[in-house]
Image (cartoon, rainbow, N blue to C red; front, side, top):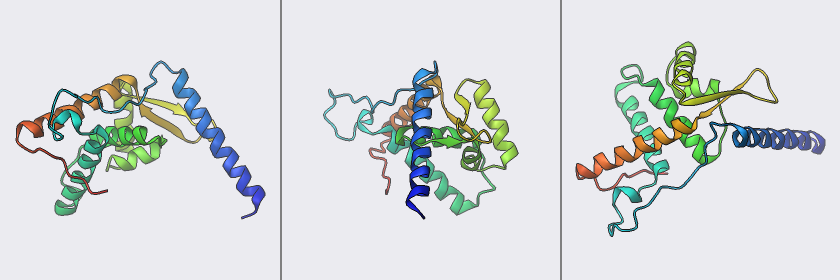
Length: 173
């Protein structure tokens, strides 16, 4: 690939990233990523407040993958949850999610995935925006409320495991 082509691609990618950042900064539904709020009064390294939410989300995705591997992908269906987990992980990692990739993350047909995207949007859990560089694509991310509710859900999952005596969520990277 010539240096000129590579430079153009890099410039376009940089412009896209700046545009997405600018949109997120100016939207009312903007989310500010923050680390897990840790309770320093607890001595135990395993206390639920000390487990990173991103790790919890990744472990839930890994558990669903393992479940699907054991039972097949057609037995269980939870498209909205898979979408919300995918959006949470993408946001925490600084990645952009398109509607197409979110439909894939839902583990359902595209038409079903699009219906779930509409429902999550109606519930104000996600925000949809046109890609400023490719009008065929739609960028999707968690709304402020969606992000807060995901963090609460992840905290409650850890707390539930803690109460059951599951002291540690193990996740292989």
